[in-house]
Image 1 (cartoon, rainbow, N blue to C red):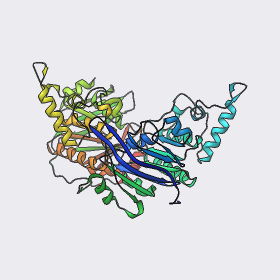
Image 2 (image 1 turned 90 degrees about the horizontal axis):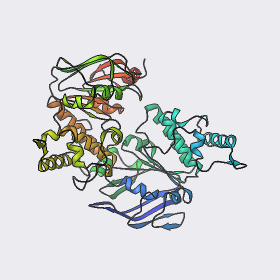
Image 3 (image 1 turned 90 degrees about the vertical axis):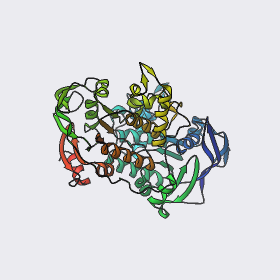
Image 4 (image 1 turned 120 degrees about the vertical axis):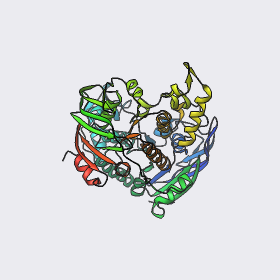
Amino acid sequence: MDEQKILVSARQIVKRYPGVLALDKVDMDFYSGEIHAICGENGAGKSTFIKILTGAIQPDSGCIEIDSVVRNGFEPHEAMNDFGISAIYQEFNLIPALSIAENLFLGNEPRKNGLIDVNKMNKMAKEILQSLEVDLDPKLPVENLAVAYQQIVEIAKATYHKAKLLIMDEPTAPLTIHEVDTLFALVKRLKAQGITIIYISHRLLEIFELSDRVTVFRDGKKIATLKTSDTSKDELIHLMVNRKLEETYPERSHFIGEKILEVLHVSTATRLKDVSFLLHKGEILGFGGLVGAGRTELARAVYGADQITAGQILINGHKVSIRHPQNAVTLKIGLVPEDRKLHGIISELSVKENISFSSFNKVSKLGLINVSLLEQAATYMIKLLRIATPNTQKKVKELSGGNQQKVIIGRWLTSDCDIILFDEPTRGIDVGAKQEIYEHINELASQGKAIILISSDMQELLGMSDRIIVMHEGVITGELTKEEATQDKVLRLASGE
């Protein structure tokens, strides 16, 4: 990496929203051919900054310099076509029914006699994929690809548009362990080709494996830029949260009580096949497995979102019928879903309304909502979970993804659930907030609440669970005590061995 060659400079970037200073005079340089990581807590300003770089939003003041051209801002098509800045977000910008080639050249298809030259398009797409050392048939529909390969298609689009600066926002969040290895190899090849990568991640191990330099954001400010080889995990955490975090997985001592939930020989049309397990009061029961193993479908079945076709569910020894999520809420079962945007938040409602959505009976009398109690409940959760919002009235869709997740968790903390299903609760959550969420989960268990924890984060699964049940293709392949559980054992069971 030539440290003297600066590709992009951001100078004194300021962005304000009502009640929030999202970016406060941010100065940054990005070198040609480097992997530059950006980390920070949710609401620190990372997403706002990259949206300014891509032209999705305009700064209130400050400027960006690229290739000796100074601009106060630009439109997305200018960022991509004129300056070679592309971004890959967690939600892909692909059309599932179209082929890989059609997605790559959408709007720029090669033509012959006024018609799309399909053969040439497929040949060009093949050459782009081969340049990334990826063996994919360009005629395949994108909807038939695994998530990791859809992500590769996004990267291929960026290289087709001759990206000089590629921004990757939490790229490993939806990937399996093996898919992460594939992505890392591709990112390193892009760097070798001279492309600058901005890599945003809450997973600090990834930052140390991939990046040359790392910048920490906090409260809308750039706190520090460091050579990754010169810093440590503890230093980055301290810079991000500005407080000491004692343990990643807090110690706890609690009594595991009598069984509360029995799932007996349950099958569903979606994926589950003859699934049986027990859950006890005060227990954190982890569920491991690869993407598609059936863990989310299990949570949805217990919560009434997916219909059970065989088997039964018992709570406190009594058979129950859960045909709808409302039945689950009545039975004091809560769910923090994997897809917060689709199944968790109610985007047009406020933070206050989202937090209290399942607890209106606690803040109402004779069918009338007590506005004061509603405000108190929301204010308490905002403070407890450190939700970055200027007030309780802000629409939840305007919060960062991590803060939206905290709102959903706050909803079930506010309610009086006896059983809470956490499906990937810390995905997209910063390291400081993770610690707080772990502490809240532990506190719930100490109160006798029964917890199901579904996680693709192996260290989280091992560190938080009293027992671990592993699934593969809709069936349970094994059960491990906390003392028995190791990463190797979980992965073997997850692969169906």
